[in-house]
Length: 195
Image (cartoon, rainbow, N blue to C red; front, side, top):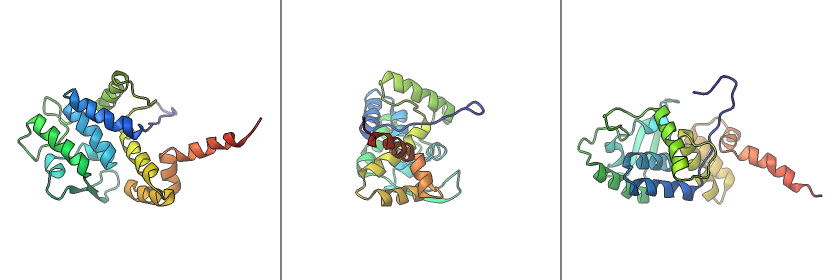
């Protein structure tokens, strides 16, 4: 929770740093957090929707799932990346999951993770793994997804329209601001000056 009238933000991780973090967490036997961060950067869902994922949703034969977004109430279909499917299966096996209807992100006591707890964990991970990110929070995962989609596209405007749809934003300008592109464009203005 932020203080009233304070400025809060989250930043995105560079894609290579994010995928490396997922691998390191798995290597360090932190399987659920590895999976949580992986799902965050590969699906672009809000944290409230990530926390509702079950093993059945992630491990079905179709390699996709549908959910109704908590925030918008809209239907969202998510396709699971082929490379990431293997990571999901590896985490499933390492965790010895028997109940496929079980939520993926439960504590050792069997309780669902809270957003506040995850944010604390992400701050610890930032320090432990020396991540180059200023403000690392659950929202950073969704922003990392958005930046990767935008930067990987040959057509920036089309990428922004797709992201606008995926994020359920009302305009491309909101998506640009969300990804931090608007501020970058404004700051580039200063680079055109010479002395």
